[in-house]
Image (cartoon, rainbow, N blue to C red; front, side):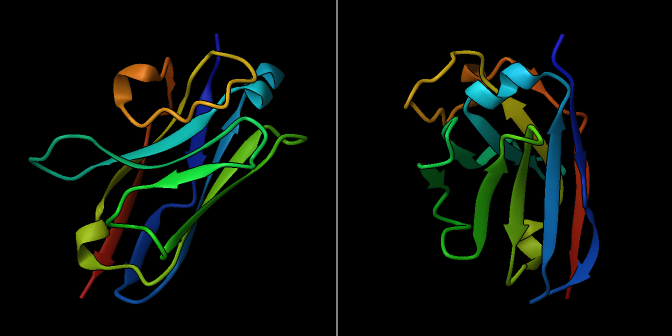
Length: 127
């Protein structure tokens, strides 16, 4: 059973930065695409960003394009979401997810394409 553990959330002022990490328990996750989603109170969970298994391809939601950067270190089975120029509307619980199709170039962008999820980490951006 794959376990994903997010960390790095917290409270930050608008314009500030945070870096989220997602550590996977299984080395097989190094062969899977990984993604980040977020859910604000009273809203649906939404796609934020995703990265291919080899880190060569990334995809971002329009709302975070140019501000967030997703990367991965397969030796550590960890993905990182660098979030800059944070806005109050970025406030949400952020979830890391892993699909289980190895070595695919597809980058899933919908929640149903992912098989494993972390417990989430809270990000709060104050004005």
